[in-house]
Structures are given as structure tokens and as C-alpha cells.
Length: 381
Ligand SMILES: [Zn+2]
Image 1 (tube, rainbow, N blue to C red):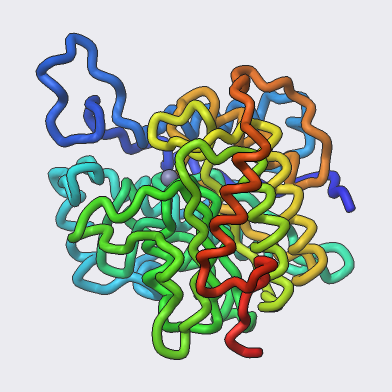
Image 2 (cartoon, rainbow, N blue to C red; image 1 turned 90 degrees about the vertical axis):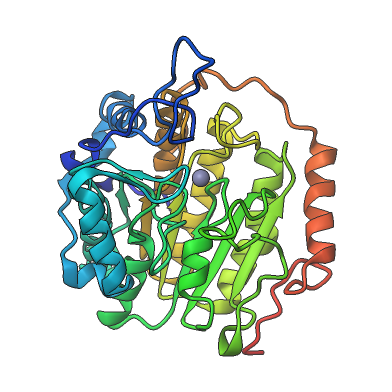
């Protein structure tokens, strides 16, 4: 059923932090006359805000001011020594990895990102019309899903998604499912709940493997399935470079939604990255506006069916400064079940449907947690 309006959460401080220009490394290339802006910058989110404020369906979005995360909230997921490291790094700025830079004074923006995700969660949990959850979208940066309890990685410092999952449980919900379609593996979220059954983590991503033994030892492969009692509750869905709308939609309908049905979550959190778009500098998958719109529509219907519409959407990646805004707008309309009312300003690269089919068939065939039809082998039986 289509909804009329979507609650969106934003805090201006998320735009306050900016790292020095340069590719991804701490030293700008001396070979270039013209450096490019650091990929994870405020402009990408400023454009998400502007497309949603000025697009044809702007009237459907109800804006709310977010807030900063407190130390106590941060410590529900992160460790105290790590928080102290962030505070120390905030004084003069610090590179936590070759790609992960906290500018001096940047912790204010980091706190606003995570805190605004929590503000959106509180709105989801507030009883809406008919006792249903109020679907809410936190438009934030820096992203969440690479941050582990004590590790900064991949532009991420605080994992607002993980903090929101824990806050939902502290408020009485038993089971949370995280659906991550950012083009990168959600390793920090995976790590945070790896031994637990009460948070089901599902990550769709390009098959990029581990990029750093120190910050990102996880591979994102299908054999990372959880540990101890959590075995079976982490589902990685890596797809090759070039996978597009068809492959992602097939994963959603054939694998993710049936797994959500089998799990029975009380809340679904979407790690909503747009870097699987075909124009992203940091990704090699081929989604466009239609693809993002479709994914969002499917997961919102699942939330309606399975958990009274309790759906929290948290912005993750998306590094094409212009296209990310359009793609995020498309997801917002998809979550609402409303038709896409913008022409795609860029999308032109057609995906081969046979390749999409073969990609998903091959993934299902080699996945230890899926049966031959793609159904999750629910450890609870
Ligand atoms: Zn990403």
C-alpha cells in the first residue's frame, strides 16, 4: 500500500566536516594539476537534501531536525578506548586508515550523523496511525556500516545503524534485520552482531574482498556466516562487477525477502547506499534510478507485511556528487510505494538480463546458507 509522506531526518552539522582534496589517499597525487575533492564529502549529502527538497514530490517529505549522539549512546556499541581515540583525533585531525580521515573538529559531524539515525529510529518506534511504525529516513554522513566497535574504516567512524538496532532492542523489540545494499560489504555491522541471533545481517555488495588486514579483514564472501550461536545469521551476497538492476532485484525477491519472512523481524533497518549506481567512482555495479526505486519498494512492502511498517532507512555511501542525490530521491519514492516521477538524468548502460540471471543462480548455487531455490536455511528450523 502506498504511503503519502515520508519522515526524513537531517542535521546541518553533518555537512560541517570536509577532508582535504585528493583521490583516496592521505597524500594528493603530485602527478595531477587538478585534485578532486575527497570522495566522502558534504557535497554528496547536500545534493541528496536538495533533490529531495526541490524534486516533483518534495511535498511528500516531512523534514525533522536530527541531533548529536551522546557518549552514552556511542558506548552502547563502541568501546570506551575507541571513543577516546576519536576525541583525541578530533583535536588536530587524524587519518585512521589511508582512506578514513577525521578532520579537526569533525567529531561534531560524526556525532550528528549517528545521532540523527537515532532520532529517526525514535520516530519509527513512536506509535503512528493504526499502531504502525513511522517509516523514517536519516539523511546523514559519514556512513555507518564499515565502523566496528573499535575500528574506523572506509570513511566510517560511528556505526549509527548498529547503535539504532541496539536502541530498538533496549526499547523492547526482540529481533532486528539489517538489509544493506551499499555496494560495499557491511563489515562493521556484520562484526558487531556476528555471534548473535537477535540481529540478522544481510549485505548485498560487489565482490571486492578484504581491502585491509587491519581495518577490513572481512572478505564479504558467502562463507562468513556468523559464529557460535550466531552461526547462520549473517548472509553475505557478493556479486561480480557489472551486476545491475536485474541482479539486485532478483537477490531481493528470491533471497532477501524470503529470509526476512523466515526470520520474522520486529524492525528492518536499511543501510541505504547509492554507490551501486553505474556512475559511482567507488563502485562497479550498474544500478540506476529504476533499480534503486524497485529495491526500496520491495523492502518497504516486506516491512509492512512483517513488522507493522517499522522501517528505518539510514544513508550510507554514494559518491557521485550529482547522481547520488537523484538515486536517493528514487529510493525515497520507492519506500513510499509512489511512482518514480523523475527521468533518469544519466542512466544509459543496459544490463544483460541473461548475465543478471546467471549471476544470481551462481550465487545461490555456492551459498552455504541457501538451499537450491535460494531459501535461507534458518538455523532455528
Ligand atoms: Zn559503500
